[in-house]
Length: 62
Image 1 (cartoon, rainbow, N blue to C red):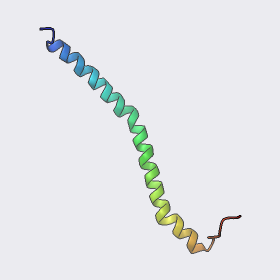
Image 2 (cartoon, rainbow, N blue to C red; image 1 turned 60 degrees about the vertical axis):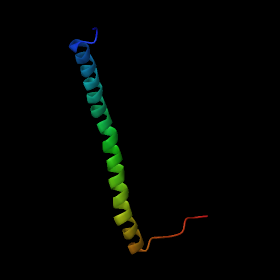
Image 3 (cartoon, helix red, strand yellow; image 1 turned 90 degrees about the vertical axis):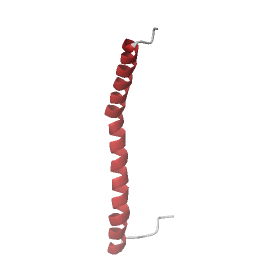
Image 4 (spheres, rainbow, N blue to C red; image 1 turned 45 degrees about the horizontal axis):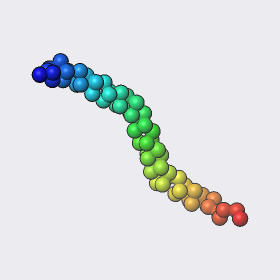
């Protein structure tokens, strides 16, 4: 009896609000992760080949 449409509406609105907050704030974290992945892939493909092509690859100092 006490579980009418008004109570379901409140739960839906709370869930919708929580989902919107997660999308708003979680988007920044996802964007940062994607940027790091893109940068690491670029470095693997370009950075190392440029370094070895220039002949600057030297052993680390002891």
